[in-house]
Length: 578
Ligand code: ATP
Ligand code: MG
Image (cartoon, rainbow, N blue to C red; front, side, top):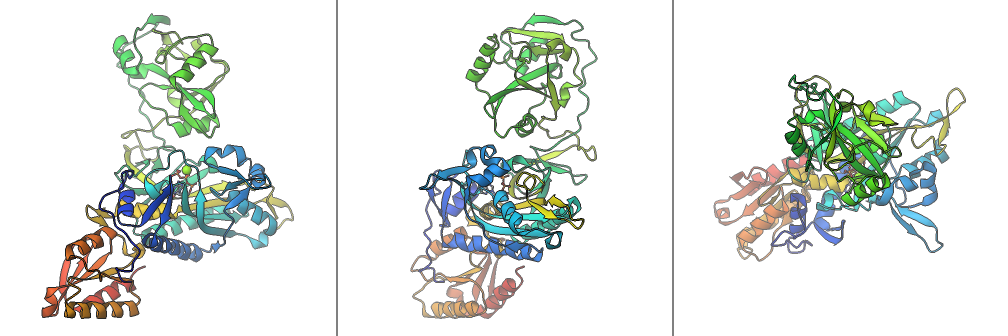
């Protein structure tokens, strides 16, 4: 490809709405252009990268025994009603009507469709196990599309679905996919961590995510991990062992009574006012889960993990209640307390969920829905809670102890590029998708599902490989392997050598760009660095001594070698791409 013909326009500046490196770089280097919120054009350079990521995925999925198919992007409502997800999927599901008023949706994922395909054709144990996958655009009306390709509304995903006779078969396939994923991300030049995670709206019991570890904002997940053993988990799923809350041996409140606690709106203010450790306070928080209020109780030195709470409440959407909603909740129960003094007392019809930390609390301090007052020396029995559900709803913190080995946990941020789920019979049962087993009985398939964000993986590769000058693509997914830059296109010898090299490399199957533009060398070098060609061969004045410059983008290292050596070197590198 000649640079003068390549359809790419690099920008002088980063786009103003770009917050993270991959968005900034991909937009500025001319890979992507936004069409509308969360929806991007993949320009020719980007498309080359995406096809490479897709091909790596294809090769490894095929090698792992899966078969590729392609399902429709538009799906009928009826299918989603069969699984019970038409309502449950929430607002991310983009619903629409056709001209006959038939209700459809844009596919955010394909469990329903694939289960229907299996139900039609997969009738006997003899046909199993089978794993089917596709690579396709998905649409999710994300609440907050952001970070460019990392969280778009339309994005490309590889989704695979496995069908097994039993749990043991699913276990085998799950491990098979975990191994394939490791190879896929390795080949894409990404170092990933496989972490335990929450199963979310897709459901199922066991799931793992593949995280690219990053210390930047682009990592939307907190990953807790142990250096001593292999424990690692997304914060929405992480658990830890807590040391018992050490109270300093003093008896604080032997008697149960109501105390005036004026202006103590925060835990800090309250513990200061009463001169007590925060471990002695029972914190009550109001959340809205699927439009209904839920009260969460937790020992006040700890924080609530919203996904855990949402799962415990059996919902699919959660947010903290606004002050207006809290006021309304109070008014509905005959109280008028302001936040800071809220408690579970008198909230009969509200779901109340207590964290495990609450179990051991004695003679504590708690809000009783009266402004400027707290009950001290309280115990759960004093609060008249009719139905109290205990669950682990606690956010783990750095330094708490590993649930496997007891050493302190560390935390880092990660970008989820893929995940694997054990679905079990979550879809096959309600959709009545069954096979006939060896014993002649019909049984629901035991399913798994396995996703990889293709566009997100490419963006994550930029997050992991860049410097202040631009992208440093891992060679296996770079749009081109090398660029040849003649410093002066009017110098006959330089152009002759550059052209010869260009033809030789093309013949050898190297993906090469010749920068034949009439631009200053500095401009060409800047563009080469920004676009992120893994190698650059510069043909300048030194060609008079028979030498070119061979630059490695990753390290910045420059070697002065002959054009023949440069050609051999890059051909060898390309041959060794895995
Ligand atoms: P997240 O928690 O980041 O929203 P998810 O759990 O919704 O992800 P899945 O439904 O399991 O993701 O989708 C499989 C893969 O698709 C994810 O691992 C991720 O790589 C990718 N993906 C999901 N949502 C998006 C998005 N909005 N933009 C780009 N890629 C996405
Ligand atoms: Mg999501």
